[in-house]
Image (cartoon, rainbow over all chains, first blue to last red; front, side, top):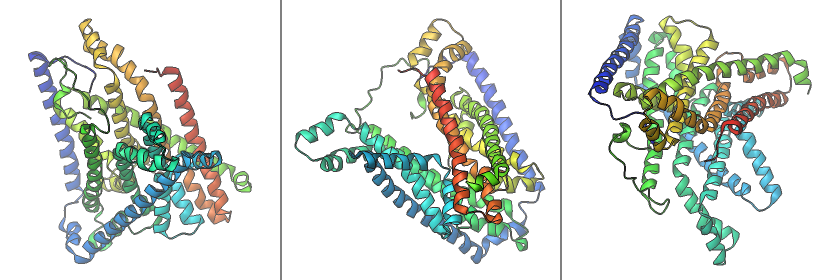
Length: 287
Length: 214
């Protein structure tokens, strides 16, 4: 936070904040307790609903689902990166028709819901669920990544390209040896964040009956023999999903933090000599 | 062309469903997002922690999982609402996390000196926030808000698969009626382009009107 929203609190304000804090905590705890009571009252913690997770078959089902999710993610990520590179190169090309074609493609795929593309490939082109999911994700994320790459190349200091041209490098050489390496480095956090989007969107495979993680969960949840363990399934699946995405997001923040420390990517920010008053948000990590 | 003309009512219903879903979820997301942003910059630690947790968890939750949990899970608690309302709830909560971050980043773009100057002029907290910081933050927030809401309009397509009347769901009856699938999808795509392009035009206009080059 760089805006000074409030003064450093004095004793009275601190007391007030403490009261607010206690009240807020109580309200949140009450909410949590209410949810727990609801869970217990509707019998979500009965043994019948939880024992299935001890069965080998169920565990295998979940693990296969997870593996399928990761496979779809890996394929989609690689294809999206490749497509993004191609489209970005097209948009940066000196040939006008190529540039226009790529611009139209990128803009179209970015404006379209990814689910519409997946359904189109699945229903109209009669593709396999995995193919439909991966190609839909690759098209969408590829176009977004193309924009990321392009803005990254544009963000490289102009002198870099000019110097390379002055050394007698050709267009492709300038791009490959000078601009792209710097651009990728600067854009790494944005690229990883986009991959998080791809990972989250693999769950769309559920809607076209691709046998991924959520699909496995649905199969278990719909089983009458286990007393329809819907809530337990959600409680098991969501931490894994959210954890995976958080891990990748955390990687993006880590890359961003590393980069901020790197003087070669951006001139290091010199901490402004600030008085220690006025801000309470200072102790928190920036960014 | 026939697909569209023969089924204008069907497409109209679908488009209307998408627009309604987008508008209601956007309102919910804006309200929740503002509250969460306020929590995240508040001087009270539990509130700040709650805001952070809300944003971190929701931003890393696949929307399909959220739909799955809300639309199929909440009824198990005896909470039976129309599916559209559940969809609005899921979409709104999900989007609120992104709106919160946009607003918070907007507050962050206001130079420190502005707030400090306001305080040294003797303005109260409310005046500092309402007259100095927020108006400036609002300008910086417009573009990210626009892209968040466009993403929301696109995400509403997921609701169609959970039996909510919505544009993408239109393909199913058309398919059963024996119309060309490719053409029915072309018109669905046009419908979505209509919604997203309208939104982006709206936010471009807003930005032109309120935005200020720094």
